[in-house]
Length: 361
Image 1: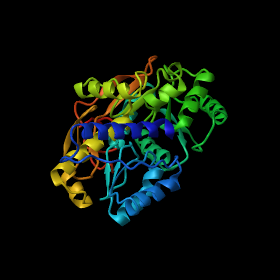
Image 2: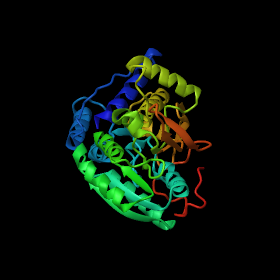
Image 3: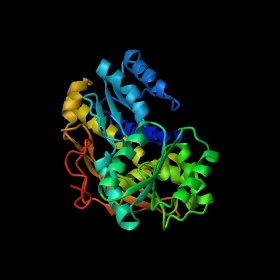
Image 4: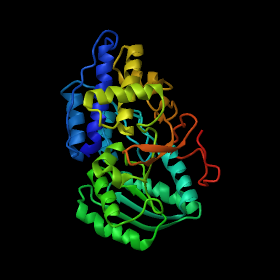
């Protein structure tokens, strides 16, 4: 997972440095305590416990996969800590000890499904990494596709550590099934292998694209710009978002890490959630979990993606809905954008399953 987790760490540290450069919070600097779980699920829970018990830390920023979040969840709930989780996820979860700042299915999956069925067709092939997020995300997408007259012509899962050789026979099976769309929930380094196998076997993204919720600018860079070109991702943020806040954010990031280093949605959420935390801490002047959580509800921040807020009903962020298509420069051309942030609805309560009236509110 390092291809994306490293950028989440960078986003967190940049936010902390900016806050400290401005004098910290109420005159005191934020001091990060950092552990690297090495993408091992068990280590996340162990390090969360160490942070809270040995290091005296009550507020934790981190986790990429849903498996790692679920490893940390019982620790922060038992010890009354607060986890800020900056990754899109499958929804259908609520905890009084978590602030969720990534997109939920109503903020990415619904609009992506509608766009794909309108432009390419209703035959979907699902491929994912074998853990909770891909299986649950595919469950949501499957329900949407079938409820709107589509069919699932195949569904396959590969281990998280799958290497390139394992994707070649998979893509041959996809080619044989003749889907209109490939919906990918493959994550981490394996993402590059899926797209490279697709490219090697001569499939054409103009007619049968890969569409994803997890393929960011970081993965496109790793697989090769020519390999990623033409494929779709739904995300709250892309580097090409045209806002003044994003221009400064990208400039600051590349000044620190290199002019060829792209930003991405997970990095951006990691960045803005630290800023929301700092503003809330300034108001409460207390690290007490309940006071922080209560105070952050409804809080707004002008993030690089646009104005975001923490939805007081769910403790999830109201973020933007966008769909991008990767270009030859390793960036995404934005082909759909909501007019404002979309209210979080992690349990998909607020609408039916028909896509006819699907819109961003």
